[in-house]
Image (cartoon, rainbow, N blue to C red):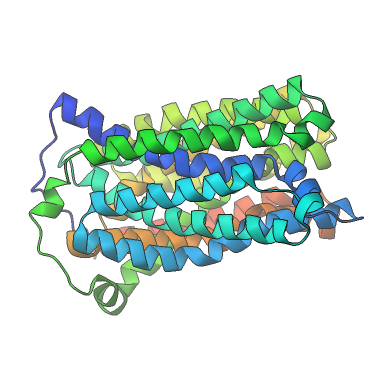
Length: 424
């Protein structure tokens, strides 16, 4: 079932650094802003979605976070197909420009108290722009990475999640510092804007680096499809469905981790700084762990590693949350977040290369972008809102673990199906 071309060779050291930096910095910027919104959901809900019922206010903020993911399949089709026709580099440049615009809007957006209903509408528009941009980023950047190497595809592609881990660290550090040093009034007045302003400053750096990097050689050597979307949907729909299945546990785990600071505040009654301290460490594990496990998959094989991690997610999620709820503290939440982040790194470090190997070069970016951006809105974008709703409707603080178990079993089924298809 693999469609990997071996035309690319591993680039020299200097070019390798530029390739990894071009993908990682842009990816970090785009995920950084998403994570900042999620981490500061409680504060944003008070400023842009005021309601007498704080739970309703939070659900509106998280719902807006999720609604922005509806546009992602559109961005995947448009920017993914653009990458398959015009090149990975062109699509990556377009996505980082769009993301910088969305970040800028969030940095300067007046609150509900200043402009009324225009405030939540403005937040929604900013999130839609960002969702469209991120949709194109994953497909083009992953294809760009794997197509620069023939024998280290797992290692190269894992830098998708190095960027996300770096973003998680930065976003969490801002949350930790701001919630520790500022009063609640200062945080509401101006503190929450600081991480968005910082994110806005990264955009020009990422744009500069991406302009200076070479196009992926495997793409340059390939035949171009003028109708990549039609070719994918008509001739490769089974690959598309299986790839969506592979993504499910990765994205659900990612967004449950994003929800942890909110969970710590609202359900465990811990301080904001405790939740942010835990997710900072989790981001470090993802940034360091993803390349390690990607490198390991080049030697041990991708599917066996992914199957093992799915099983670990399924059997450990409920005990982990039970321990956390029974003994809420900085130590317990840090332990649980680190464990889930380690599993996330082990699975996600392997995932991009495994996905890329399912599609031919001519439709790879479209296939990666569309599968990822169908799975993420359904299983990831709404995960924080689903987790909050499950906790409220079931009355159980263990509810997020049920979601992790279910999504782990879905991905395990996809891994098994791909393995059987390859051995047939």
